[in-house]
Image (cartoon, rainbow, N blue to C red; front, side):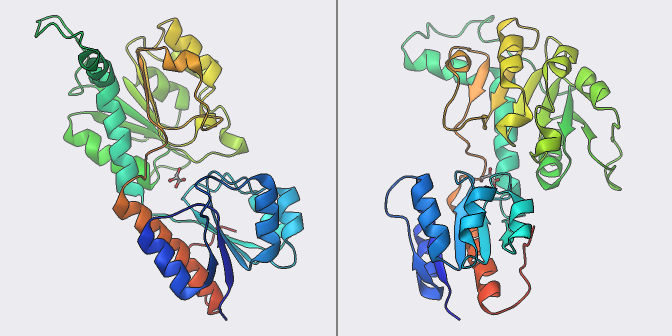
Length: 315
Ligand code: DGY
């Protein structure tokens, strides 16, 4: 069977070439995400939808996808853009792209830790606007990593990869997770205690109804005034209003963010804050990883076409 596959976003050239070689593939040449109408049209005309984090695949859309659509192959490890329960009920399988983006995403979390603690964005902005007057003993004083404590909330693959990087920089790592990991002794079962003791707190948990605003105003109030919050997972894990209030009131020192609740909108109050380091959802953005993610999507669709078990099935 050569399934009809609609790919909702443009992808690196080798991925698109492979999709076209393997499947009856329809690629996105619009240079933007599909509108709702275009998504509705797509799910009624294909056997497999290769979609991503910017596509909202909700229950009303899935109802329209029956009976044609059989597989949603998500380009991304997070699947919070898809109503998994509704997909299950509609008999539509869902796959994701785990593993391949772990190291790159951990690199971005570590980069945000360095940027926020050493005020790198601030320094670069000052230099570019021609305001640098030369080296001074008391200029751009950040805070050292060595000897500090990094609290990791969510010790999955990315959390563990971040822990390896952090230890190499002299940070002591502690973590909160659903369950302790056998090879990671620094488990903290009490999230509040971890939040209160961390000098840097990194959010690496999956997003869903149970983790919505996991870091809320109450939690932020427990953080040290010198503490830095890092989020490379999903924007709505953190109550953004409360975070802005904490940064503005300087009850925490800084934040490093790669994700936002209503992407691509970024709140203008965050943009105005020198203490906020802001990246445009770049965690997995390397050529190697985006090609690997695309290949993983293609591998899942190929398994579906050949009637094999789906390697990365999540629903
Ligand atoms: C993911 O994989 O979930 C990322 O957020 C997109 O790369």
